[in-house]
Amino acid sequence: MSKRAFVDSPIIDAVKVDQTVLLDEDTTHRFLRILRLSSGTPVELFDGTGRVARGILQTQAPAHMTQVQVEFLVENGPPIVLAQAMVKMDKLEQIVQRSTELGVSEILLFDAERSQVNFKDKAEQKLERLARIAKDAARQSERSHTPAVSGPHSFAQLLKICADFPGLKVMGDLNGTQTLPALLSQALCKQGVLVIVGPEGGLAPAELLELASHEVIATIWNPNVLRTETAGMAAIAVIQGLTFELASFFKLHSDERGIAHKL
Image (tube, rainbow, N blue to C red; front, side, top):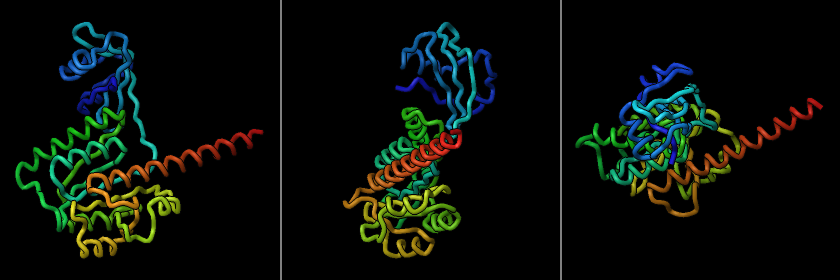
């Protein structure tokens, strides 16, 4: 388990480099009661925006951190935005948790023609719960950024998002003419990838046509029919794996050229 705690941004705002930082009640409880850390343990506070305060835990009351340094971390690879059609809350929780662990930058929920649920009741509380799940998943997977969770957007709003999105836009289709890896290998998609996933019954034919008219490419993510809570994860894993491989390849060859130049 990570020796990290999520804190609100004002706490990071108030951190002074190399000065003692008192820990709030929730952070103290996490470090001392849940993780049972001892004095001298390196710990981190992060606010989900990329800022991380690193220091050494001191458990004597009041619990605090010493030798504090603040860094801003940038996540590697292109931003990945997951647009997920509305499904039951238990499935949404899985989707938010796992897509956060896999590295998505943002999660957009939208209403599709075949969506069988909505957020008419207690919408704000449900979004807050999904946001908490994203924060916990970011901490668990030691990410420096927590993806924003928004919605539910109307399908018309989704089309507007597609029109404004500068990067690659894809949706899963077993009858697609291209595989996702082949499409990604043709362009590194530095401006990001928007992954659109339909509900349990899939996107309606009219929705597929409208998305295609907004330059959303129907692609094959996997040779099998996937559940809605699995489909997005499969696409994200492919994108992350391939872009990581390409980034490593280019870094390796860049390093080799640098060595050759020095010689």
